[in-house]
Length: 389
Length: 141
Image (cartoon, rainbow over all chains, first blue to last red; front, side, top):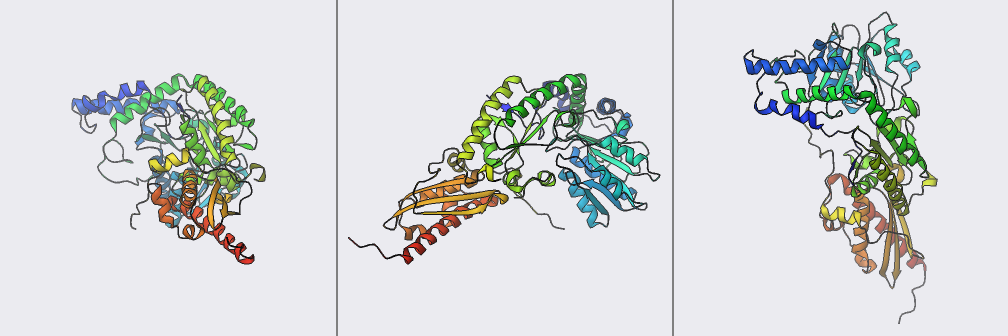
């Protein structure tokens, strides 16, 4: 049996999405910049996708800019707002548990003379909002927080953060990286009070290489890329038209069945969690219940190493991600697991299972039959005893 | 600023290495070993324990336990295979490169796995030498 449980990394493209994209490679291949019919067709397609995406986040179509993905959207948002507001202040606030696409940009800004505070999180991964209030100053121009943590599934209190910022006399912009949250939790830019929101297509059964940045009207933002302006001042260059069309279609499908899919993923998630809890010396990372992403199960199996576990599960047809350092090019444990206070030796044994609407009850039955066996097998050959950790 | 080219985010293992990882031949505990040596730290993500049974200066049996990634298990298994049946002096001459080569090469970032099993072997052999030096040589013949 093949079971794909790494939907937090990327998702299979929905067949309906592929179908929608295909004409835009060969027949409707025009460049949207010129108003002849082929160009107009491409421009119309972009506009339609803008409308669909705008509706899904309660924004207006003109507020949606297409990007190469959430990584680029995060860069455009953070640096763009920092540069445009540098005369008002040079202080930014983010958290210790953000995606590298936020953290690396913040580090870059620190080198350029900005000051960045990285907020701590509690043992379940929730951002400390009291600490946020303490760090806000007359120099603060931007706060950047993901609505859902991509590693441990914590749903962050972004609405509360939005409210804290709105209560201030001085305008402080709020950026929300919603790459891991889109399609899992509601993203309503008005409810959150977000000025900027990053989205990604390939995490919601759309194609890779396309994403979007929501920029609320009136937000001062400087472009960070320069070149030939086609449709968007902030993002020069030829748009990925088939990708944008596919993104739009993926969002349509996501919105059509949102509640049903969320309920389905939640049921499968809770089955996995109860099953894993029966394995001795196992920790579930992140919160339970309503404050956890319906698609995320993060589990630390003490006494074993995540990469071995990942590859053994792969031998059994199950694809998962690991928080272990050993499967990446840097040999440090995940910064998120460290931030929630996990010991490195335990963090190394962490596996992330992430669901999509396509997963079935049978796949969960199968996974629950394989995982305890692999855990036992790896613990048997380990010199590290789980009870010692 | 210069551009640094890094290895791919995902590691590429050789087929030989993966086969060793899937079916290690020498993994497990050993009863009454002559020496046991351990290297690594679970906090750093890898730990290796080596058991050697040595008779007449020859490694007649060897086994290992691993807390680590696929490369850790595969290099450990290969290290054991390369020294099993050898004399202590021969085992002392084993090179890290031989371990990696026997596995069809190792990704650069995983070389430390071969280093770990190599260091554990060295430690075990040194301990064996030390224990021999302290005792009277067994009667010959």
